[in-house]
Image: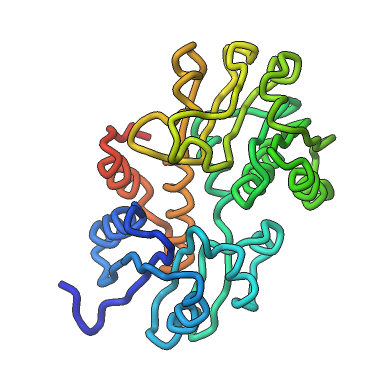
Length: 289
């Protein structure tokens, strides 16, 4: 029962009704018998500053931020982790004795999801589609998995080039290149890819994805969509149809949530409990780990 001693965590977004985070976090609280609750709050961009100030005033444990708040939060929350600064976005705000700290769990969440799939990028090519915040997380995850080369493909080359410059200094990656979306049909480029990651909302509201030569890719090339949905996305459907391995962003969401849970509650998350809750919401069967 929710009472006067119940502690609250939340997700702020616009829209936010579709969020699966409450199901994951509340399943974790129930499993650990914690008097805590996680709720979804519809916060429009103009109300974000007031909503963030309310975290301390109301004694929230912290909040997750989703579209469109991750970048704007950096201008409001002054204490930021190195990861949030590097990615230029904060998706987890933690309340520590009335002081707000901004974190970003995107890249680590994606990295953990790819490691669960036994993805090895050492010495290989990773292709990232998009040049926004999600693409930044995909680049960092590929770097941490030791990709030798990363190619960013985006409709606007200037945005891709700007993103490449931000991450060029980080790493063990020998090169980061950029090109337009037309290169998704370049047989030579696609023929070298170990992974192709979609970090755009393309296909989220439409039935089609950009033209892409799926058959040019190696048979073991993984197609990973940072979008998650109950059904295969337009980016993943053609890959699955010709037998390429595919995965969507559900596991990334899971591990982002587990990292946020630890930040908010100061203890490890019951990941398998959260996985089952998430898969149940998506109408899938959770695989045993």
